[in-house]
Length: 429
Image 1: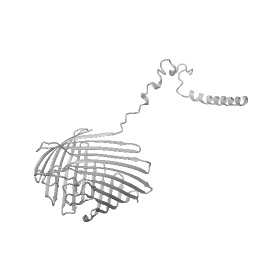
Image 2: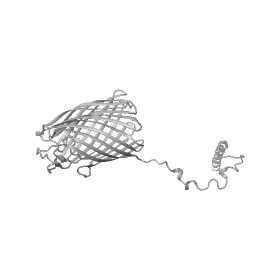
Image 3: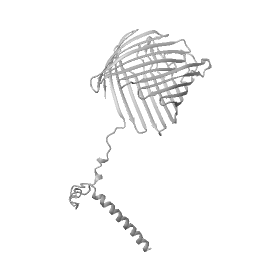
């Protein structure tokens, strides 16, 4: 027993001696020894120099640099708009505040934005919130191949009298409250990628006040929507991806239609195929076509079959130019103040933005739309043109000028034109 203990102590002594022999040259070459080599004049050993106090009593060196969770951006715009329309002319003052919060992490991304439009017509002097929009988008990467996403939107809008497409006998349009929540998951399998989405939405319409003082209730237009979708894509080349997309939906109304006296609950199904191309950061284009079916629970209302066309193009040849064009197909309930059972609309738009220099930016836009209302003879067409400029006084202040022309022609209210001139100032972060 004693012999074993001595062997153990002997091994420990040899180990310690070897460690000391290896450590001495390292210490001799370090900055721990200064002066004549005796180490008696080492600054670290002088009285009152080191250490003055225990290191952990001051944890300043442990603090991380200031790094807020969200990047905050905000702006406030004050605008005056003169409108000359078919039914007369008007002047409105608008206050448009907006704020955006963004967080980009190693796996997650969160973006929140909010904007409001507060309007004061010159003829009435009353202040109203014509638009309020909130949006939240989030994403989280489970791994390099799988990503979760979720989002929500809320909007409260009311069209101002005289807006093209709004009947001339409406003194106060219906307030529309729309909100939706959606979730999704996407995963890559080599050259294939699959995405599954689901969502729920809610649409509420307030009463409409006519010029003669009549108040028309729109409670029978309120509905809840349920949607689910599947998208499968194949990366045919490093640039081109072909995809197929299918979706199912359900619209559930709070009440039966006061005009038709039957329920307008319906199921929706869409199927489309398309191709997407991405050329670095210069050009991105998507085009798809398909069919949509809307079938009502009430057999007497039949079904609506629609050809679907969608496209989107983003072209940025350099940092000064940005061009966007799109084509969309919308199949949805007609909403308040409209006839029929289903609104089928085709729309196209184009936007061009050019940054002349650090203090001047120009923009132009155009749009076109054509809608029919199934279950009635009502139709609606229209187009618009516009141009604008932003002149930056300094880093935080810019002067804005815009001109816009809108034309609308509907079976309910005939042709309407509107010219708008807007001047304002924007203060931003």
